[in-house]
Length: 223
Image 1 (tube, rainbow, N blue to C red):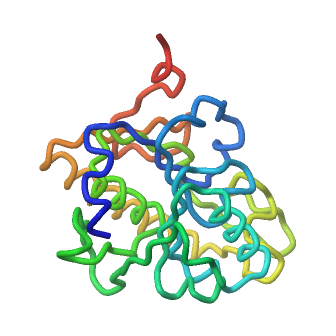
Image 2 (image 1 turned 180 degrees about the vertical axis):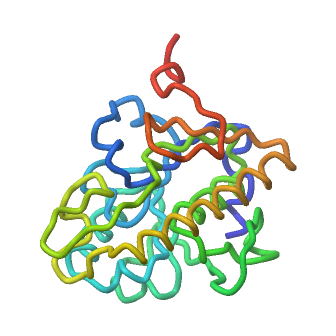
C-alpha cells in the first residue's frame, strides 16, 4: 500500500455508493475521472479502482461473478485477504487490511488499518483520503435503507436483484442497523476530512445523507 500514498494528491475523485440514484445519473462524465467502486457496481459502471472488503461478496455466486468482472476491467483493485476466495489474479491487485473492532477513520492504513465496521463506503472514503484525493465527491449514497420483505425486489440499490438469490432479505432490524452504522461512518469521515483540510461533498441527487455539504452533480462538470 505504501506506493499508493498521495498517489492522486490534490486531484478530485468520485466515490460510488450503490444506491438507487446511481442508475438514474449521467455516468458518462465519470469515464475519465478517478473513481472508486465496490461490490457489484460493475453491473452498472466500471470504476477505475475496485475496493472489495465485504464478506457478502464471497457468500453469493452472483456477487462473486460481478466482483471478478469489476476487477478484470479496473485499472487497479484493492482487496482484503478474505477476497482470496474470489480466485482473482494477482496482477493489478493490492491486498490491504481492515479492522472490525471499534470505530475510527484511518487516513493511513500502514499506521492503522482502515475501519470496516461501518460500510464498504467508509472504506472507500478512507482509501480516497490515503491516496491524496481532494476534493472527494460521494455519489450513489442515498442512505435510508428500508426493509425488504422476502420475495420483494431490493429497493435500496441500483438494481432490484442486487443482493442475489442466495442472500437474506433486509428486515426492519437489519435496515435500522445499516442506517445507524453508515451514518456513524459518514460522521467520522466528515470529522477527519475537516480536521485535515480535505473537502468532501455529497453529490448524490436526493437521498437522506445530510452529513456532508451538498453540491449539484452536473455543476461539477459545467465549463
